Image 1 (cartoon, one colour):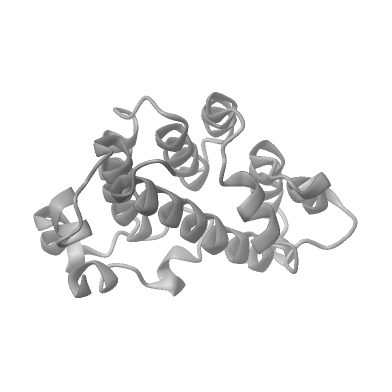
Image 2: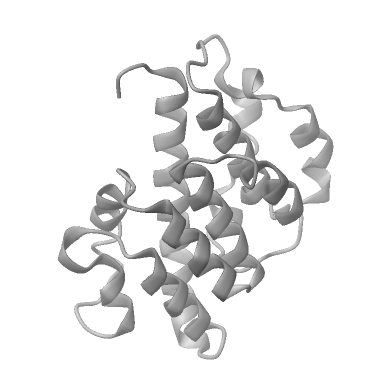
Length: 180
């Protein structure tokens, strides 16, 4: 729906760090329920629908609100959103913990494919997509390194956008489709 599309600004999502909450969108975010996110589509997986809700808060830099939702979702996708939130707030050890809780997520391979052009063939960041699969802990390490080396920030931001879009798409599809 248009109201949801208005909440997804690729430039805002394209930040690996916390960012400033977009207070001009708070009322709109507070009004968005999972039913609003999916319009006329029937929700078949409420956890995935809640993941999408957490993602929209996170996309607009409301880390606490996203955290409140994601920490209540005991699935691999919920743990992934939870890990992203902690990584963005700079709590790297907590982010690593949550990414270990994710396990082998089915969207990791898609993310590795999407980031193929962003990942140089050598260096710390190349470990993120090693062997055609995604290594979220290596990406956390790379983001932590970027907090000390500004030359790495652009790559971290580009990957953050791909990560958000991949996981949101995965959650959106699974929230509304059976048997995926």
